Length: 392
Ligand SMILES: [Ca+2]
Image (cartoon, rainbow, N blue to C red; front, side, top):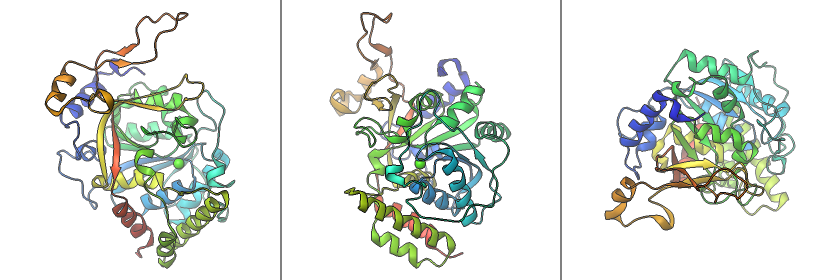
């Protein structure tokens, strides 16, 4: 999956990199939403073709409902993956959301039951045994399509080359499986917006965010694919804690989506309270969707992101390299020189037993991701609650 062998991806990435300043707040717009300039992408534009890959999941459920009530998105498919709970639950939960939103025309596909090379670790501790915080909805009548998720993803991207954005709000197993099956696929994807990762510590371990922890090998394939990646991680999603007031606003909404969202939100808050969690539940996945709909909600910064896959304690950690962050950052006047002089990408010190002799993995800093560093939480909740509760 070395992007060096992908001329088309490199050309596009270099274009994106050179056309966005390192601290550009508008760069999310140009990359994620495919806008031709740095003009802020306003809600109401589009629609943009998207595939949503998901593991519902409390915050997935609300993110799916948000997406299905957002005219900026043309949802080509929803693909389910094992993650928060096993596939036998995430798939019917995705189908339930499609039915609640009255959007049964959207194809829903079954994806991976397990990560690429690891045993599945779930998060029932946070999402309840049924994945919806214990909120119970009828069995879905709608059936998934026959194609497996990775096949459907390839079919849709092949049908609309350069047009499809992947909105991933679960572990990246389905996406990596699709990329592994077709070396040309990455070059045909417009962009990928993920809820996942963190540059400020994890949530399932001190190092790793859950989605990347579950399938770090898949996440690494995605980051190294050459697809322009927008990472909406814990750095910002930690600032999206759902409150009783939000639930009351949802309950006041006179439509089935708002009522379902209120039920899920109420159960999730109670679940968190019973378990003694001090914060949350955070609306991680909804923020990734909202940030694609309205990029002005997020402030972005470019990084080279790689994923720890070998760590005994830290597998799934996303490591963000930047010449303009951390202790190696330069004074304002020196930033350009520092970047021009190149910042080598260092890995661990070589072991005596290994064949590697240098810690340098790449001799030059080339960003592969826009990482969300800050969020306007109030405006995010205005968008989320507003879209779910409004009548139409
Ligand atoms: Ca999720």
